[in-house]
Length: 456
Image (cartoon, rainbow, N blue to C red; front, top):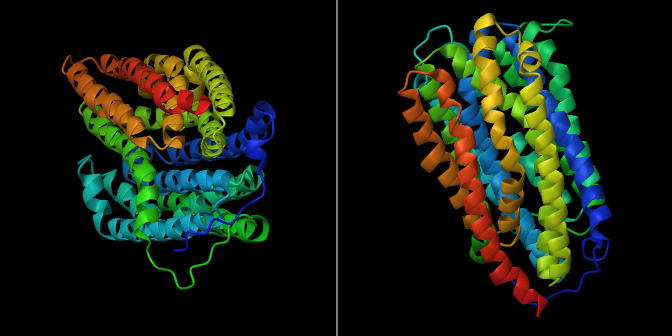
């Protein structure tokens, strides 16, 4: 590849005041992610109307489904970080090469999950339950969402290209297109409305992949028609080891972090299943509800990462620090709102899922206890995204491993040995306190070794 660096025009991420820049990029992403979170909630609301077993079946499929999304988004983080840095350095050749190599990686990952979906879905569901009323629905749901998954990889890839150049309003359009279509198609395919066959749980999965297809096509069109700073062509493509290594250096830790979440969910399903399948259903409901609170913070993350990476490449530590400070304040505010809602009206949220008396009895204390972790989570999330933007994704990976595998799962298992289900939920705030301590230590190190030297 040529070493010639072609100059590029200045990007608003290097010149526009931080507050309006961050919010102009974050608000569209937050709105689109809120719509996605709404889809997640609505999807489970409709499934819950079939039966509690149907809701549990879908919950058992979440770890593998989330693992797939972890690969798509994790690679996207690596692609986005390299793209933003190259844009900040005005290196057009590296910008285009990053896009080509990133698209190749996304397609390879998608192909792997197609095979997993076809051959591994049944064994995965069996490993979490032996209840015959749950296994068939869980298997068919997982086969559909993973076996027809390339659309989500394509959608996330082109969404990241739009985000890397600051065109978040277009990325929002693609996300919202897929989410809205999901919401519309869910009841139609689940219950067999307007002439469609009643597909039950399989209908929820079909609506998901159809929404992903529509979102992917929309993002692809918007990139090629509006994103002129990145030129993507696979003509005469060859894997480029150096570029792939750079993308994976940031992307793999991000994948591992999100994959750890899938492993955590899988282990929690097994721990809770010892008590009752209703506890598993409650955990699934919590995950849907918490996405409505966390998604806006993740939208903020998606906006701040390219800003920090761009200004890191442009050697503007003042703009980097402004972005981090503003993001921390806003993220913590959002999480405190979520904490208050979970404390005050947990029953209202559970009733949205046709909660039985048993589910209410288990769910109310569960939501109140787990949501204590929200107080610390906003700050920790922003720290993790800062590490990724500065090419230190391994720090985020370490914090995630420590929180979910070293602390949360072992503590949850130990508390389960008491035979008291409510005790298990305390593993979440305990793990988040540990995350707070380690994230702060890493951030102080990053500030000393990377940000402050730029000031000289």
